[in-house]
Image (cartoon, rainbow, N blue to C red; front, side, top):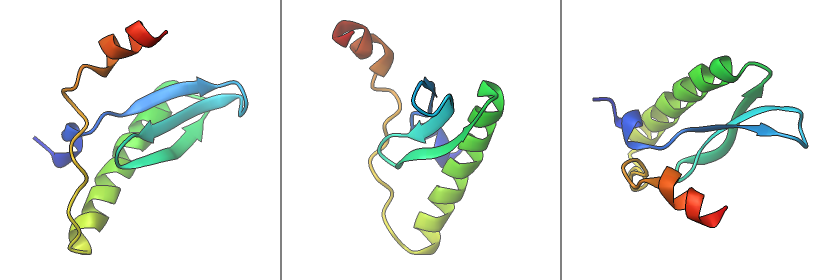
Length: 79
């Protein structure tokens, strides 16, 4: 398993920007955007991998993982 699998990746439609925006909460926000949801997710995965590699190259500790926290069900109770 890659380290990037430990982080939640979100692609959502932005009414303000009129495009899909990808982010990885806990690692970075607003990492990429575009008109095609699947292309934005693919790019987001690449950006997450690159960000993790930069952390490692700089000798920095990665932020705590965000995956496995059941955010989808938690967000249902907020909405």
